[in-house]
Image (cartoon, rainbow, N blue to C red):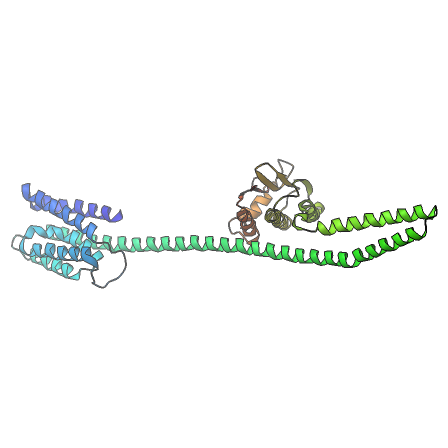
Length: 386
């Protein structure tokens, strides 16, 4: 659009010269011809670069190339056509048509040497021509800068999207690695219990059965029966423990409670945890990871008095809220956490902590909302999937 405005300005300035040297039908013919020439060239010339080599590309550029030369040649044979020169020079800067530019300069000089030359008109046309060249160069440079800016912006958005995706994949890989390590350790413990304690208890139960068969007199028989029942209960308990060492045994409540222990030394801690044991493993890891990052940020940056950690399971979603704040509403320091985070850089220049939080939320298709009203509040919603 900037080139259209440039051409409107050039035509308006050219009209003043037209009014001075021609009238009637001649004025209208020259004006309409100049407008049509300008519009056709605007459509034909598509080049938007800073190349200075005269090398038309495609049929449209070749048509514009020839049209500019013919318009410039017209100024050599028809003096009033010199009024086309400003708009021709504007287009030749863009098309790199040095032939048309050279012919236009010759036509302008020929008009100056004419017998009926008006020096004021010549100087005016010359000034408008110089202005048109400057406008064309300025607009071209501006468009190049805009395109470069858009390219850099698009590249930046693409790279940020790629980095976020890679970060999410890294988080998933790390969680999977942790899970595999835990699962391997559970399997090892289960084998140890089964192979050692289980076999020992089985042997003790067999031995107790033999003793019961030998000692049938009372009260020894009753006492031995009680010991065997105790051994049977212990064996059943061990079997149950071994079988329950699976994925769903990750206790979110105990993990969050353990992670929040350091907060009790400096803050008034309020916790409300309500989540079922059947929560998917990925969501459990996400909740634990998000809470860990938030607690770490609170310990490092917060100067507030209270911390709320609320985790609730709803029919359609899981909701996690972590908020550090000042319980005294009118405290002069109630915005200290806000200043630390938004004023000095954590929100404006997020580090790996907040990026990890975003990555974990995205890995569960959840939504993250961060606010800095009276402290720092992280609000996470994760949809439940059937």
